View 1 (cartoon, rainbow, N blue to C red):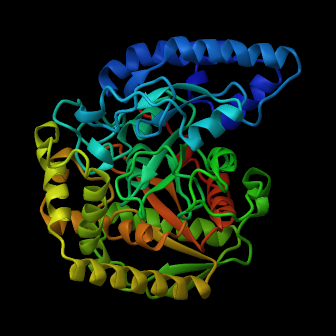
View 2 (cartoon, one colour):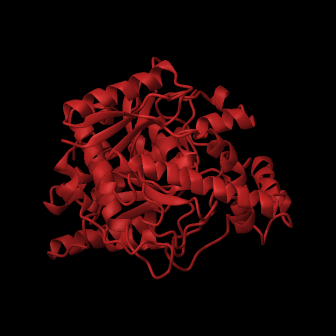
View 3 (spheres, helix red, strand yellow):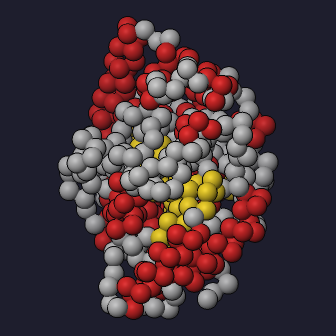
Length: 461
C-alpha cells in the first residue's frame, strides 16, 4: 500500500479497488489506524463503527473477487455527518438529548451510499442541532491546518476528517453555510446541491426548507461521483425533485469554454486573502475559456440578517416535542435560537417569506443572464477561533452574507480551495449555478482544479 493511501482521491481509491490493487479491508483498516492516532487530537468523529465497517469491507472484497460490484463507491470507506440516520447506530445530531437515539432505518442518502458499495466508517461530529455552536458536552473538532483557526460549522467533523485523511469523502448539510464554511476552512471541495436535488428523508432537520445535504470531498470529480449516488427523487421525501440525475462524473470534463462567468464588482467586506482567491479564480477560469461578465449582485445583507429568524422558526418547529419542556438538555446558544423562533409572530414570518421570495427572484434574474456566478465564501477569508467567538448579530450576518441567501434561494453552489493565508490556512471561493445545474458548476470546478494545485495540498499532520 502507498504510504499516503489516506490522502488518495476517492476516484483513485475506487479505481484501485476495482482493479484489485487494493482491498476494502486494507483501505478501511489503514484509515482506522490513522483515526486511532490523528483523531485523538482532531476529534472529528462522534462515533467510529469499526466492527461493522470491517465486516462490510470484507463483504465488498468477496463481491469483488466474485466479479460483482455494488456501484461506483464499491468498497470505498467514507463517513457521514451525525444527523444522517444509520440503522442500529446512534444518531445524535450533536445533541445531548439524542445521544441514545438509535434509528431502525438508514437515511435515504446513507442507504444509497451503501447500495453503491460504500463502507461507512462512522458518524462525524457536528454542532448542536446543526446550528452554530457545539453542545457544551462536546469537544469541538480541531482545524488540522492550524489549531488556532475555526474548523467551520456545522459540518465541522466532516470537514476535518476529510481534510485530515480520516475518510475518503463525507456527507455534510448546509442550512446557512454549513457545507461551505468547513469546506473552505479545511481546503475541501464542498457541494451544496439545489434544494430538492438530494433527499432529506432520515436527516435530522435544523430548518427543513433551508436544509441541503451534499458531499464534502477533496476534488470536484470526487464530489461529482458522490452526488451521482445520493441525488434523485425519493418516495420518502416528497420535496425531493423528480428531475433526472445526470452522470455528473461523465460530464465533468465539459469545461467552461464559452460560459458566461458573472463577476460581481459590488462585493463588500472582503479582506486581502479572500480578494486574492477570488481574483485568482477569475483569472484561471478565464484562461480555461470562460467569459467574465461584470454583474451587480443584489443586496443580500437583509437576507443574511433575517436568515437567523427564519431558521429559528423552523428549528423551533423541529424541536417542538422537547423544547422548552427539556430546556436543561440544550446548550445556551441553541436554546436561544429556539426561544427566538418561538417568539416570532405570523406577520413577521410572512414578511420573511416575502423577503425570501424577493431574494430568490433577484438571484434567478441574475442567473438568467449568465451561466455561472463567482462569489467568495466569506469576506474574512479565514476567521480565527478568537474572532469566531464574537456572536454579535452583525458579525454573524456578515459571515453569512455570501452563503445564507443561497440557502434561502436554493441555488446550487460549489466551494473550492483557491489560496492560503500567511498562517497556512486554506482560503476558498464558490461557483453558483442555475437550479439543477450541478453538472455545470462541477465542470467549472474541475476545470479550475486541472490548472491549480490548491486541492492537492494537505495539512501538516
